Length: 83
Length: 271
Ligand SMILES: Nc1ncnc2c1ncn2[C@@H]1O[C@H](COP(=O)(O)OP(=O)(O)O)[C@@H](O)[C@H]1O
Ligand SMILES: [Mg+2]
Image (cartoon, rainbow over all chains, first blue to last red; front, side, top):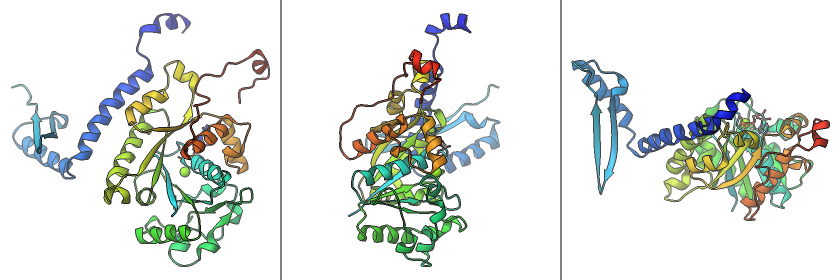
């Protein structure tokens, strides 16, 4: 343990890892928060439709709402499996 | 006009009830007529922390449903003449807390001359918690320097900013961040999020940092709000937080590791 300590100076601490994970997660959650309430349902429905045609994993479909000027843009990303 | 101060967090076990008791006692000590209400219907605990568990006859739900008057249900604190306690119901279900009923009780408390109404929110985002949030003028967000607590605090901030009465009327609830169970030595070692980290992530003004302290368990064992313990670091830190809430400028204490002198090491001291 003591030996490890000598070298751990440059290694990222667990607190730094916690902060980084939280910042990513929370910025994502805040984005969804400002979207309309139906966004999660819409995502679920779209996923079901896509799945009728291609076998995609749940986390390979992402849907987000971005504000561009005075309009909102609904962005749908589907990562299709190879072949 | 009474000011409603809701103590909330989303996550359970982070120190809401400990903080509600301390803040209410601190406001009363500062000369303000204060009442502290337990919103945790079914899981009453504030009465124990305040040391009034044997004096509860009627509770919050009894008052809402008209089975008792506020005067019958309010428990006058024996240490602080400015402080009263309204206990949660132990038996009735959460749906008893209607918006109309809670609103009426708060209004009546204001008419009785209470300046501060401190609401001890239950964990979660169910009825008791949303009712406590709904009427808030100020919200004290109790957060432990730990990932799930910080995330839940952010959820609660979202609810405050969209679903509270003030938000719906186009206004804003005053938000204050209270970090509790802080261990400066572990922060120094990079094992715990620092107060700056938590502030960065949540972007809420810090009102206090309460150290992890043995005095808190001792206080709850004896039913005395920890803020009344002048020898305890946590008690003094709560005192500072209340002073800041009331507009005073105070430096943060107990945020750097304690230097263990030879003396305290021999005595096995600490707190
Ligand atoms: N600063 C602190 N130091 C040590 N223990 C604490 C501190 N704050 C709270 N606790 C302990 O944590 C537990 C949960 O506290 P409580 O106030 O009941 O939280 P909540 O109301 O959020 O569920 C209790 O056992 C309490 O004694
Ligand atoms: Mg509690």
